[in-house]
Length: 247
Length: 126
Ligand code: SF4
Ligand code: FES
Image (cartoon, rainbow over all chains, first blue to last red; front, top):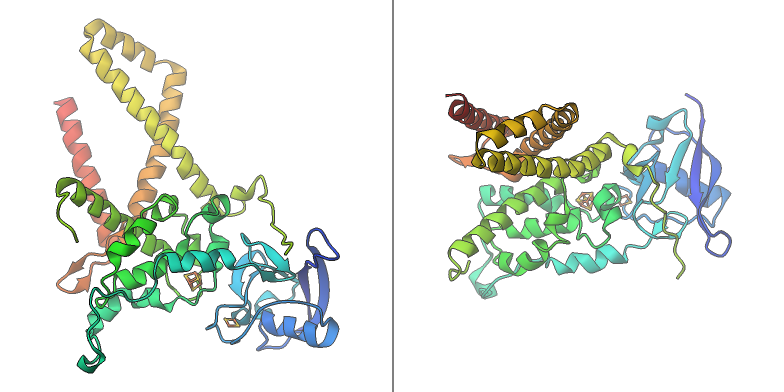
């Protein structure tokens, strides 16, 4: 095995460049090094000005998403040896404005996420003394997959609908809405409905499926969206036939 | 804050098979609409009597109309097949607490398609 590999890293320094340029760095090729370790090596040893986000280094925080050789990836969970002999092209996540180097502006996602109210909503909260809201393993199974989301936004980066229609609420936000809609303890489905069934919600999705392919956590946002389409369609038919019945 | 927004490449939809499929499926809507128009023209011709029906048949036999219809059928097939393919992702059906395997959901769709086609064929060819 060669002992070095080339990282081609997108640099964007707004005070220097009007658009990103690629810069190459030689980094050690070690067996357990992820792309993120390569970048850390660059920052520590070669060029301290390189900017990128990371935190947990173990695929949990969702902050290290980047485009590696054209694919959206968690850079802490993508290994250099898998790209040997290189070079490895590292760019910021697509479909987001770039602030600097590999750092993207995530404001859009941060404003959209609370719109689907991704928390447990109850009509009446039972007092704490009464204990937890109990749930069977089967009820947990209904939504558990969607609860694995780490908000890494790789799905947004992979989605061509999001790049064409930036108002699209997007895969993760819809999957997270479903995470609560399908939770037996939750009673907020009706409150989430307007946003989800709007043109910027589920109906913008035409099932490209790349979000689910890109997701590092097996969330299957594409599946969540299709499932809600069926729910929304059944609901509107019910409303049409029985306009007075609620919930 | 000055940010950089990557422009969309003209041929972005050729970058991946799934993107190409996505664009083709969007396009298929035009051909689905064409079949609706064609069907309406047929019904109209039939209701106008034998002569106009014969005229419609002659027009349908023209080379370009056949070509358009063959192309439209391919697109409609793409539409239907990809539609059936996503059905198990949209429908989570539980039978006695167990989730029905995706293949069975897809198979049920194809079966329904077959039965409906057989009924239509029987009505037309009878
Ligand atoms: S759904 Fe998957 S890809 Fe999208 S933000 Fe959540 S973990 Fe990341
Ligand atoms: S650094 Fe936390 S997910 Fe990669």
